[in-house]
Length: 433
Image (tube, rainbow, N blue to C red; front, side, top):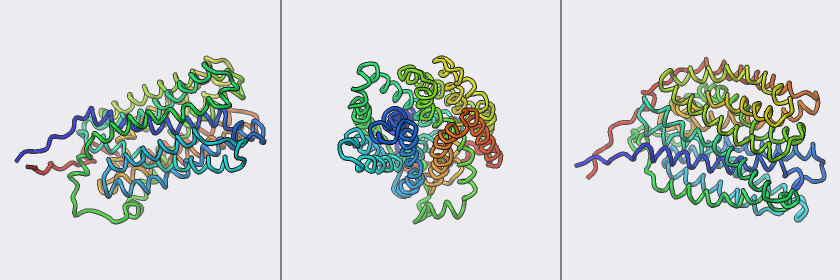
């Protein structure tokens, strides 16, 4: 009798990161397109301001779908396994993104175009709602507790690298074609080209095994409805986990969607310059994510998230005065402030949120907390930001809003229990022939 060898953590970490990069890339190219072109190709009769607001609203629709995705795919992830579920979410995201790239515009099929756009965006939201928890569990449930923060950072790199990649893709199209060509067909290229990334992601994910914690879970401890058990046993952890993560979403989606539009329309900066600064902002976010995650293994998840949310209060106040200087480099610095501060709290959350819930409903619990935060911080705040600038004529109100949300996240983090290496227990693997 011999024990089955566990898969190498490096391979697992790369598989989790590859999938989240692809899923969030598909998710973010929509946001970039919504800020740059969707007001013109899907809402041409509304004018620039109203068209942009409605285009960003279709971006926000996915955030409403994300908690439903976390419940739907969390159910199957907790019942059938993490690996199968993650393959399904990747396929759903890839096919939805391809369909957006092939979708006729309003000028071709009329009002049916924006209706189909919203439906496809909802499918993207369902997919990414089920993606994050499963990807983080690949690393969190396989890694040794004392290095869980380090390995759980890999799926956390998905949003930052995906934003940098999405900005680079749109920058390439902008530099290689005219504005007319970009509006006519160039914006479709990132959506259609994502099929190649999805193929790579599927290859990587199909090659990995199920997580150690799921394989060795107590089969006598199970539930027919993971969502019902989460809400009956740990509703407070779901709500506080969401509140703790809310500022991360608010800052991040202001940075990746609203500021793309703000830089080109309000500050009148060249589109290419705004996209180039987006690449830099994404890389700054990645760097602080790595820092926050690694330090969480030394000083604790909760302490690092407290530090991140505290710094976010300050960043919210100073970011827009920097942005409103109006130069390309001040825009880049302001964007780096907004995105850089996020990573300090976001890095540790890849280990912290899974550590809050037991194995048999961990996929559902962690996913619900994360995606509820997405609704509160990522779906609503960019819309409020647009309305604030339109009604008050001042961007400083957005900074005050962000600082207030960071203060709420700080209070929620203080109310959460601290988690540690023993929070996810993996029993000894059964012997196999």
